[in-house]
Length: 314
Image (cartoon, rainbow, N blue to C red):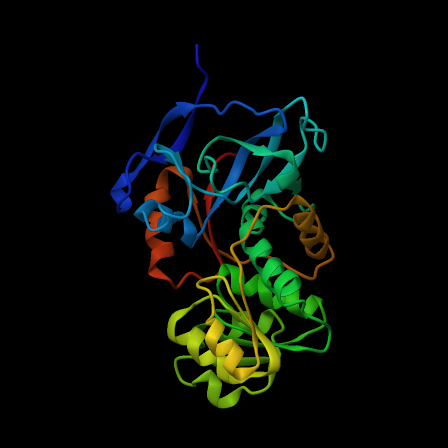
């Protein structure tokens, strides 16, 4: 008899109605995998972009597909080559996005992708960290090589990625300028940003000059206008679309595009910052796994303050 679990899968690409809460087989382990009993899984924009079919030419998915690549839970089985964890360990992970995800009661991931869950976070808050935390880390630390004393402009600072990026930049000793809407003034202040810009009232390029790094989480017109605020040799890092090679060359600037990868060691470093009180995730809402359609609708609305999380098990 095949053991089954509850999961949210898509059998075709499309709107909210293609999300199905159903019984599916529990995943089988590869030799270097661990099996995690999922306690919570966060919802990210990439989830609904995959569901809509926007990334069909980029990612090698097979349908039906379980969505969700942001997980916190407990190790319940260990593959013969997975030596990093043991049964009973609590972990968090942003797994390989080309495998089945975490909108499920169980998920199989490579042990190298996971890290011990920060001790100061419950599973709901821990699930909100991996994808956003790794995005911020790989953009600011790896790509921009942000240094203490530098100035960074972070767009959409009240979002899941932006809020962690602000805290990471401050932990690295940088000066942070943050853009968000007026309703998020207090929230951004709590993150200790040095300067706040309400993008609905002020064009950031009119009040910001000579920054070392711009972190673009929006793209489009925001990315294009961001070139104006960089000092010579500065870098524009985007996680939305590759910045223009031609504009960078014309202005004597650098550019980087980051499509994040799983990395358990980086999650360990992020976890230390969290347990040291230097970073904390922000939660917009937590919903039951069966309410994945509602979670996607909120995410697509584009105004979540912090992360949307699905509660899978206590």
